[in-house]
Length: 217
Image 1 (cartoon, rainbow, N blue to C red):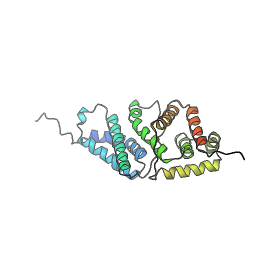
Image 2 (cartoon, one colour):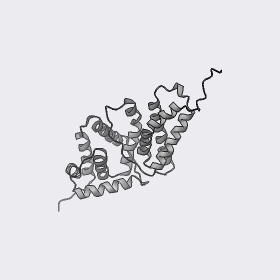
Image 3 (cartoon, rainbow, N blue to C red):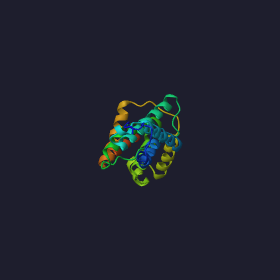
Image 4 (cartoon, helix red, strand yellow):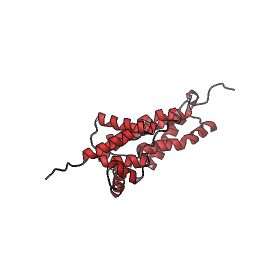
């Protein structure tokens, strides 16, 4: 009987089961980065192919390996679409990071979060971005959004509809590194500490600064 290790492509039942357990998480990662279910499903299949071809005996943490591989594949796919001037079919805001979660999940989501924040800056106006972040990421009621941003509730609802539609468009604007870092830092702080004061101030200030100046007669 041969003592040779099986070819890495021969997926055992245990390895297949490991992949199936983590598949919903992989799909969630791909969907948040690419924004579309079809694209996400295709990318998870790409991750399965990579898992199939990997020497899994050398993988110490299967969950971390699969989530990291999926994140990198998704970011590469999004960057490739951007280079071809073909935006992914949509985009969605990452959920706030749970500090009690597996730390490997938080690490592999860093790049995903950076990409999503950049997308918000590139595609949305300050008012659209503020409403989307407060509503979709932090579940603010419309009344609270209107208080923070000094908008009517009806206006906040309209801005949210418009923001979600524009995330699926190809329109982008240049974003400075400092602008990206400010929003990323505020979003991360709010997610990890549940202290949203800094994020509220940043979003509100951006909304005010974007409004046309009213000149006295």
